[in-house]
Length: 329
Image 1 (cartoon, rainbow, N blue to C red):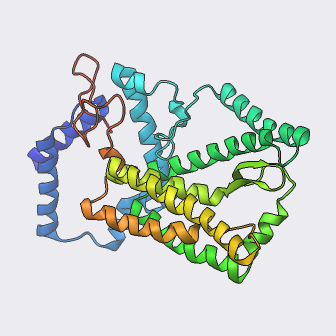
Image 2 (image 1 turned 180 degrees about the vertical axis):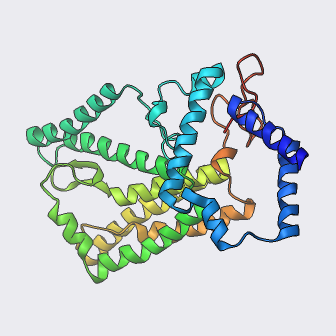
């Protein structure tokens, strides 16, 4: 009992002062706890519920985690030059487990919102000045749509979405697209309803009434999500596979089908459900890639500036006064 108490004190002091935990002491504490359970058995449901306290409620549990995280990052920013540099520009008092890894590319909030306002206004101004079929409008609108697609893709991929999930989602989306394009023409009705208005949920270019090519935001999101997730999962091999599938089945196949139908029926359809071509191809592409091994996680991806670090390892600050060799928390 005395030895267990000493270990508890050592671990508690390390956590209080931000020092490195003694791994051996922690292992012995776990072993002591297991021996106690083996000797005396479980404490029972009532005692477990009492011991859990606020952890039994998910919201309270999350709040305690976020408060502990904020204490940890503040201590790291104060004591470690390594983490102080990497946490620069982040509001540490408003940090949560959900927001710590998602930081804006442009740290200056006023500048960021000013650029967003300029982009959004440019779409409306171009639409009013040149019309819905003019190239300036479609360039501005496509820029806004592309930024939305990139942002949504980045959040999903960095949030842990796997290529397996994306492949199955795109396969299900194939059925959805086919049904609402050919059985119940809701997609066509929606496309017709937004014609003539600014901020069309599509990207591309129109020159006049007849010439142009436009891709819907949903299709763009599917292409970006598959390609980015494939790159995260299987590096350059996944990236090459994603680009090839998007080019062949996301662009060439729908456009070729449009021209073939126009030549055969003397009537060119205004809408081709691209996911009918891309969804099955993406699923087969995933099956092909998975033969090379398991998917990588975000922790396994080597980013620029960390190429000297072993893959999958977290860059550690240099040992020295005021710096902790291991992340604390």
